[in-house]
Length: 553
Image (cartoon, rainbow, N blue to C red; front, side, top):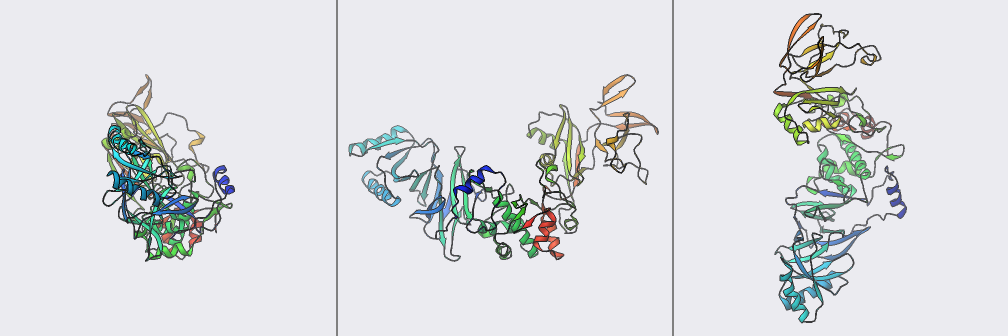
């Protein structure tokens, strides 16, 4: 029942601590990951565990070491309240079984709940869950009168209690100890346990954070972890080569993100990789994991950060245009495969009222009362928004790169504003297209003549003009013979070579966004991988299309 955990040498630990980028060997045999299980947890204070036979308890400090078995296959794990007092007897014991035997004797003699307590070194016997020290002292006096040395203690949200199905305490242990629970599943000949009625391979442990939250951590073999990831990140009905590409990317991502000094390595959601355990496993994706066992993606012999997303929209993006770090293997590439994949996310629309956007700005810590316009000022060569400016009563609020789409809750940062009072800012030298019109984001947009001189940086290398900036004009400064003044009125008359025009400048009551793709756009497009597999590409060709200059080994 015990799985052997690969022993990590002191040298390898030093390497992990000293270098931010880790180069791992190709084999993933007996490699374990720690995944925080957020779903299907129904409570922050407790969790239920159910085994397939008795629940075995392991201490994991290097290799999993089974230290005892609980006399129940269904238990509840809870935080010991910082307001609860216990009686701690002074004697120590070498094993859980010995401490349990004495606890049963004390319980028979004194009537209160007695149970083993484990501090990581020794087992002791604790008693009671008292709301006050005076209540605890009643039992303390009885024990003292019978010759037993003990003291009243309060663990202060630093201990975890395990109860059986009849609410009898079976064990209390210190939060600093890495205890994990599992059982043996005969049908698959694997260690597995259910948490809140959902089965997970490997072991399940618990930690208290913020003095009030009990988090659950699945300690699971890497390849078994991938069985529960791949079908939740990509459809198991897609071509095998796309499934293999996903398996290799997910494995690479997992190993890269191992963090020995952290409480856990990854979450079970989109913050890391979606992981739903044993019930979500599929035969096709299991096969993809098995047939690529141990294979990962490298650049210059170092493991990469294997990012992936649902749909690129027609081109992927470079990391520095979305976040900050520039990665040589994660650069934007044309992605016609994603475009013709039939993804339902190739194009999308989203609408917000002005009040909804104001709320989003307020929720992000901005003390705003009025929104005049939303302006896209910069885009990348791969069409993602680099900067979006919200003109408000407290000034212009700039949101850059991924922060703009996260604030607005959009599917990708490849988006445009297709209504509202939007104006393009240009000058009299701007070239018109064949239809003699200026590109417009909405049918009612106006064009303002700029009074500034044309600058060299306004042109591309081929002497064509760069994309025009757009946005509302209320709140901007106008220059006239009388000096400068803020545009504050609902209408504005402007003089250009075509005469006098009257423009509406007031803020829009709603904003419609049109965009392409889903996700951050970096690395592998999953729908693109699907299409490439359908067109006959192998999984390594798929990965090399999306990750520049890499090797698979």
